[in-house]
Image (cartoon, rainbow, N blue to C red; front, top):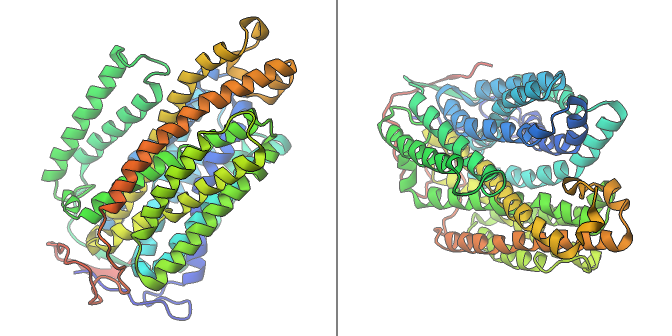
Amino acid sequence: MSVPTARATGGLHSSGTRITPTMVGCMLAAFLGILDTQIVATALPRIVGDLHGIDLFAWVTIAYVIASSVTTPIYGKLGDLFGRKVTFLSAMTLFMAGSALSGASGSMEALIIFRVVQGMGAGGIFVCVLSIIGELFSPREGAKYYGMFGMIFAGASLAGPAIGGLLTDVLSWHWVFLVNLPLGAVVFFLLAKYLHLPRQVRPSRLDYAGILTLSGAIVSLTLLTSWAGVQYAWTSPRIIGLCTSAVLCLALFIVSESRAVEPIVPLRLFKDSTFTLSLLGTVICGIVFVGSVNFLALYVQVVTGASPTTSGFVLLPMMLGLVLSSVGSSKIIRKSGKYKVFPVASMALGIVGALLLSTMDASTPRLVSVLFMVVFGFASGLSAQVFTQAAQNTAPPQDLGAVSGAATFGRSFGTSIGISLFASIFYGRLTDEITAHVPAAALRGVDHEALSSPSVLNSLAAPVRHAVEQAYAAALTPVFVTAVPILAAGLLITLCMKNLTLRSQHHGGGERESAPATDPAPTKATPEAA
């Protein structure tokens, strides 16, 4: 049976963990994980120019996303089997090694390989942080720290482009990767020194079949959403093959999990409707609220003509709305213990926000577009970490890592699906809109793929530039229209969730909302080693 952990008193947890430095380390780790994608995106044009690999441009990001998505649920299970601390430090070591190798890359092929290594480490950062919070605090106590994730996301999203541009211009693009090393070292020190959790020692067997089949399904689905309708036709042999591979791997994964002694994702968790609905809600949040942010930045820079620096200020109110709603909802949840109203409100308000965003065009005043984005950001913050809290609230203690891993994976996988889906919709529409708005002769000799570049746009005559801006705005409209039915499905899902109260004690403390399955294997609590 698991060993209950008591509340922290005076900054010192009963397990010996120093709360303040541990949480600083956890939040800094989460900041690094989010910041990395932002600063690399800013530096990519310079990287491609130096390494001469425009045909491999997208794979710098795709390789990272696939690796992190594949490893996220695996880290959750490893934390359950071998302890949160050693699992987290291993993931951070891999992330730092991948960062160092990426910064030293001399070719696009090498960079892509090293980004896989970096992504394999990044996949463990968020799930380990969530699991550590879940083990140190009860769901209601942990609401404060879950709310901080909204602030971390907003801060990294706002600072990322500026930091990436500054590092690339002042030093070199290599430093967008190397900057992770000193910050990662601080994270490693803080958790190695101050985090002390009991580790549950029990006979264990890693689910290799589950790892392989889940990896195959994730890779197939990611490539499918990245390529279908963009690089290859939906009816092409390659896309049909990816569809077949995804379905087959998913079926084999379900079979392997039903037979595994220590499954990566225990199928019994899906008997709990709260877990199942929370996982679906997390995926939808990733698709819409995270996957669409890049397109808002594209609207601000291309359609309204804002510089990268100015666009950061334009997006700032939206991120502040996210922070305020995330922190505010977390405080209310912590006091009341009730959480269902917030994801319901998030989806409903998100529908309103998406409809408002879909009306924006080249003539929309910037202040009006900012207000529309604030509504969307506020909706996003209301569900930022609620689904994870809900899933952990009813999770059996021995499955806490698996539940956290599944929730983190759901958001990451939803993000990759959202970016790929919206990109397919946008780029599929953009060519038609440019043809409709811009005379062919006006763009003779201009690379259509470079029209989003400020230098290229500024080189065009004013009427032509305005026509291009209109074309981009028209191509962005179906992106936000598509978000509406997805959010409507999310609203239905959240309405079906049980209106439970978050526990105010840890599992084993006597206060439960349900009676989850117990661990059949005998365990023995031992101090967790670094």
